Amino acid sequence: MNERVGYLHDGRARDLQEAILWHGGEGGAAQRRYVRLSAKERDALLVFINSL
Ligand code: HEM
Image (cartoon, rainbow, N blue to C red; front, side, top):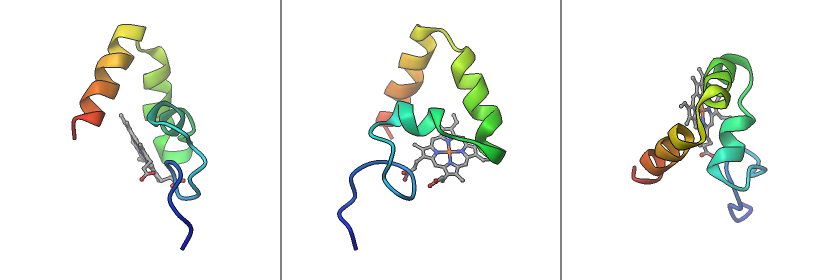
């Protein structure tokens, strides 16, 4: 097994924001909603996810 370097199945996302932005298919609606958030709302979401 390779050492885990990032997010998504192949580790290509270096951080949470990249993982969110690279959602497609069924996850595409969540990606589009994320893109529409204000900078403040995005930060609040990332803080929440990192708290889990
Ligand atoms: C606020 C909404 C969402 C956030 C913050 C989010 C976040 C994430 C993150 C961080 C990962 C990477 C997990 C890892 O590397 O272990 C991931 C993977 C994934 N998410 Fe989401 N997600 C969201 C919504 C959704 C929705 C609505 C769907 C589908 C209906 C979805 C489907 C997937 C799938 C299939 C993967 C695996 C993709 C891959 O490994 O290439 N996500 N998500």
